[in-house]
Length: 603
Image (cartoon, rainbow, N blue to C red; front, side):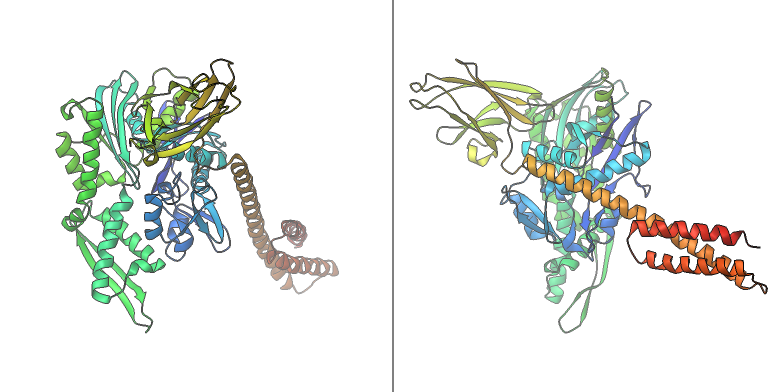
């Protein structure tokens, strides 16, 4: 079976890993870094920029640079997270054709799976350069609290990137795999995962290579971005109080504030105070330049984010109760995600759990390593690693009066299935409509609508006579599917519930082809650039020969003819260099090679 890579598709940074000779290893990118910024930009020329290249130009190209896209993936237009991003992000978020959120870049709207696919494509390329072969299969991680729409959108992103996502696993579960892999561990552990955009907490039992998730919960809108936002608000407020200018309303100023806030946050993990210096942050209409020069202390930062830290601890408490455990039953606490480097978070976790958190895993790399371990287990059909995960949300249907009837409870081990028998409620009813929701509210409309399922072609009969058995399945990826059977006739119908905000098959296929066309054009551009550089080098070499021969006193007619031909070739090469015509460039390369050979042979 093909080698399966592991990808941590993060909000702030992404990471790719692979298992080699039984050892999981993170693969560094071309710059030698083990993580790559999850940032995508479209340059003025229309070229895609990813990772560090996108991050470096974010200030001058703020409107066309996307960060934290993971916070929007699978979200419906009008939802609270989308409305929040509309107010705080410098890039333009627009309503898509399926009531989904999309991002407008250079006049084109991109779906969130498209944006995420560009990051996955970069991770795939990093792995390909290391493995010296194209990886086609991957295990990709998602926040434990992602719902069906978000998981399906992540799978779509993989397809667009040319990756078969063979399994989606929860980030805390992946971190636990990295923690327990190859060790004889018999313990109940808590994984506290606070990353750039999301927070998850999972309680697991690890027994002899079996990783059994007991409960999981989280907040898909609590992460490092929110901690950055508190510093941004603080800096903007202080600046506005002094200068009567709101920096958040200027795209470039906001991006500079964001960068400064992130740097200050990182510094405050190791220092008591961080200085913030942003010269020429704003220019008034009068031409007067304003500068931001201030500092923020660790104590002040901790005051600004105290409620965020408390929110995470509150979720931890509920999750332990859901597992039927007490805090004292937790043997070890694993910290995952860059935000767990913050001393205040480490202190809060230690205080709540009553023990010092483990430092056995790397907070930035553990999730990708765990994904690679799961990929290795799947590709090699290994029996020494068994993962038993859970569904983070209850699955159910809308019943009469708008109520929500739970059919599969949250924290049920997956894969799982549940059957429910429906009957017709009207005489001669030939179709049954079932509306599927995911969530914990007793009112269906307050939960996440997954889709509507209609069983057609039922026989006409009095109300209550026709029975339809509907089986709801949740796969190991957390993806929901439905199978319905008319119990009398045996007629069956199966579908995968597609969220109303999901992409159509036709759209996904179009995006796959568009992505392939773009990559092919990019490869051609790179090949042209290589040949143009080769042509420039050859021009210089031929010109050196011409200079050498022109200094000779006695020039034969044969030499003169050769030099004239070489000069013609050089002039044609200059014209070729100013074009993007691959065939013209290659013809000039061949002409100069011949001229160089002839000139080199003249003494």
